[in-house]
Image (cartoon, rainbow, N blue to C red; front, top):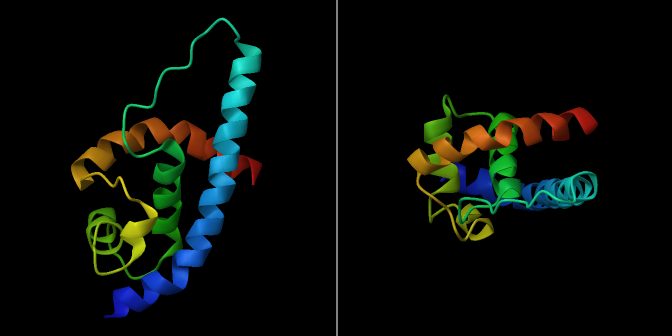
Length: 115
């Protein structure tokens, strides 16, 4: 029950964080188009967007009480009882998320550097 209380109290903070990250991703994509107009932008290889992946990664470091990322993801993000899953309707499995995490490291680093 403690996870439900934590989850519901952080929903609004996550939404604000997601909006900031999503705006950053949109702006970065526009800058890329302007700098490299001849290069096509490849489609993101997942149902879960880059901004959602970055939001989940930052949220893990903001929340105390989880010893590792796997328990955080399975108990907090990918759990129908917490209410957080409604923020991520196209959530992927933990194993798939770990694969996608690798491609979000550079944008995440740049986002954190600019904030």
